[in-house]
Amino acid sequence: MNAAYANVPLRPTAATPGVPGGASQRFVIDAAIGARWWTRFGSPALDRLVARAIEHNPDLGAARAALEAAHDEELAARGAYAPSVSAGFAASRARQSALLAPVPNYPAVPNEFQYDLYTPGVVVSYVPDVFGLNRRTVEIAGEQTRAARFEVAATYETLAANVAVAAIEEAALRAEVHATRRLVASDRSVTRILRLRYRQGYSSRVDLAAQQAQAATVAATLPPLEKALAEQRDLLAALLGDPPNRRRDRLDLAALHLPERLPVSLPSRLVEQRPDVRQAQANLHAASAAVGVAVAERFPNLILSANVGSTALAISDLFTGGTGFWGIGASLTAPVFEGGALRDRERAARASFREAAEQYRSTVLTAFQNVADSLAALDQDAAGLRAAAAAERATKRAFELTRRQRLAGYAGDVTLFGAEQTYLQARIGLIQAQANRYADTVALFQALGGGWWRNADLAGEER
Image (cartoon, rainbow, N blue to C red):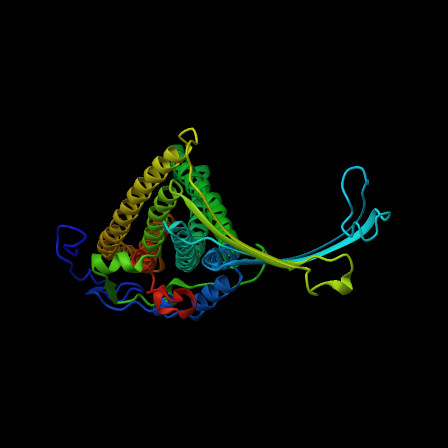
């Protein structure tokens, strides 16, 4: 494997000629990863399944909506850079006691104590960002938008990988169920033959009991397999955003093409590609900005304000001479005593920053681990497939020879069925080995980030 991820050099995997999924896989350092990497498996059915999941999966839809909300929140936060302008209009009718104060037009109408008052006006206020409070607040909102964008990318790539693995597992389980049913039928045939021979005195009770035990053991493996197959189909339906009873494309393991050239990104590039690492990085930046906000809150706050308007006893008199008013002002407030709240909030923000830093470090290490695990799995999968294929070929040949002997009269039915059972068990092992190799190839693409940055809809302005 690559020295950047493990202590042994990267080498091509073992090949198993003549077996679907048996090609040798070569690893290309820092090779490009396509945006639609699943198409490299050469399965139109898989392409359709992933496309449907991307269009209808509710988790991906929710992540996209969260990104839209975060983007709008960022735009709203940027409004702090601009002055705040508000307009208002007040209208009132009042009657006032002459003993307390004169009415507005006193003494022109000394006996009139009931009047109307109309006051339109505009108020402008502006908070200069002297200590960076607004800038750091906007920075938090921007990083939250970036984190939401990376969450969409992570959900997208995880969904594509989960659909591919679920479809592969469903195909493997379908083949295993078929082979196991043949095993169960073969065991029943052998049991019937031994029961007949026991009644005729040609077979012992021990042989019959042993066969019955074997038949029961094999039959007991079928219900869990059928249950797993049903659950896998339901899982695939949920990933596609469909009800469980909807008809969908089915994969055939034999029709899949195993990608023979696999990319292996450099560690420095991996941290740029993995959406979860980029999301953790954005969270770290947001936590750093939150520390700046907590610090700025401990400094004075300057507010500049101005107002202009008109006041009159009749609407027709508004904005005429003598009715206008205006004012400008500035206020400076500084926290003096908050019971230690501001200090404690700053300490909490710094602790949250350290937490985000450790989470980022953990995410990076997990990314390296995922790649290393995938490379190791692919190497062992190739060796396992070679061994499983050899066992399948050997048992198949033994079964064919036994069948010929049975036709020539040199072997009995029990021997033939026994050879068939051995072959079917080896066949199940080969199916599992093939599925493991396909699934771990998918896992490598996912571990490398999946090529989301080549999708313009996902990347946006990010790289």
